[in-house]
Amino acid sequence: MDSVPVRRALVSLTDKRGATEFTKALVEQGVEILSTGGTARHLEESGVAVTDVSAVTGFPEIMNGRVKTLHPAVHGGLLAVRDNPEHLQQAKDAQIPLIDMVVVNLYAFEEAISRPEVSPESAMDNVDIGGPALIRAAAKNHRFVAVVVDPEDYPVVIEEMKSQGKALCLATRRKLAAKAFALTAFYDTLIHSYLEELVQPTRSSDLPQRLALVSGRATPLRYGENPHQRAAFYPLAGEVDGAAARAERLNGKELSYNNILDLDAAARLVREFSEPAVCVIKHSNPCGAAVAGGIQEAYENALRGDPLSAFGGILALNRPLSRSLARLIADPARFFEAIIAPEVDPEAIALVRSRIKWGKNVRILACAGLQRPASAAAGSSVFQLRHVAGGMLLQDEDRGFEGETHERVTGVDLSREAEAALGFAWRIAKHVKSNAIVLACADRDGGGSHVVGVGAGQMSRIDATLLAGRKAGDASRGSVLASDAFFPFRDCVDAAAKLGVVAIIQPGGSVRDRESIAAADEQGITMVFTGRRHFRH
Image 1: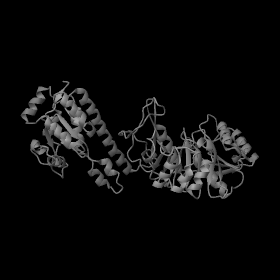
Image 2: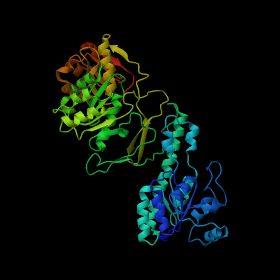
Image 3: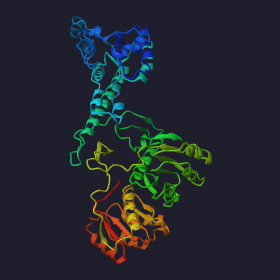
Image 4: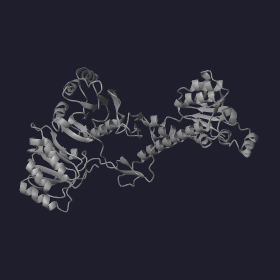
């Protein structure tokens, strides 16, 4: 049976956008409207003739509306197979009217749990039971029943009914059913995620036995990494604080796939620090970063890391973007694809737009949470996912540096400034693609630290060291070096000595650690082992 006429529709909506217009268009085509509770009142007040579901079930709504459509007279009308004589006879004997369309959306559970003050009891009150049951029944029987869960589909449905003699074809009903099951799957996943968060599993707990990932498409993107690739952003429930992909865009062009990747990397880096911090990200790697007593000083020092690579990069701040800082940023000799900060002064946007030719196009985003370091509390259940052919990889997110030993294995105790620079470089190295080497220096006034050279994504650690040195130039003299993993040979220590490095921080753990320690001793370099690596593939 390809085309099926719609004679009776059950309408029960939380989101009532377009409901009046849609149901009036159905009524004009001779469709009887069944409805419940608030939806029935809304439609009646709008002039739509409605039959209350209780008139069909012979049973009133009970338990504050929790039970109203969970009845054989409703679900029998949805699930009856129209080409099965036995089903039709049973429906006739029980005086069950056949229902040809369900127009339903669900209690706003996602909106409810997004409120900070929501209690578990209140959250559970916003779990819809009857709605998913109606949607699943109609979608299961979509050979004969249409299910409409998205107001965006109202015009399409009406147009087809007008052109097909009040009927909908099987292809349309199947497409609507697929969307309906996607909605109920997403809804159940939201509830599952919320309850899992309440349980707060410890880090020693098993990884999820079942991995449910369903998300509604929020933002279509112009294209993916390359113009021939399609792309979109799909948000996951609960991940909001400090999430660059969900920041508010206040200026500039739409975000691209690559913009979101770089903005995410930038936001993660500046959230490592409680003091004012700035970084410049290029191709997901930091080409400059700094912490200082003030955000303007941090900005100026971050640019010193690699001014050439910073051109066209992503700029992130963990302090508000002020008008005075915007004046520094709005330099015609510089160019940023995007700027992200926890807050943005409207005058800063106006200044950037008016002073530089790229000001109107630069993406300026406000991202709440960037001023707060990411939580590294034990018991955190944040996971990272990556798709590979045939499945997904899941791991705990690399959060925090707790449990690291930071044992000095060579050299002398460092000055307070050098010690701070070493810790700073170690945190930056965590955000650099492996093999990763970071060279950093303490500021002249001792108030902060900044990157002077980065070697990222190299196939050998010695190449990463040499690249970082080439980027740093003369600034490597007196710098400190961080390596995200151990040195397999002493060659990196020897190369660091030639660069003028005074201290090295690395995890240790190589079978040749003694060679690296001996090399550092020979060169008078202080070396610190952390006992933990921070690969980023």
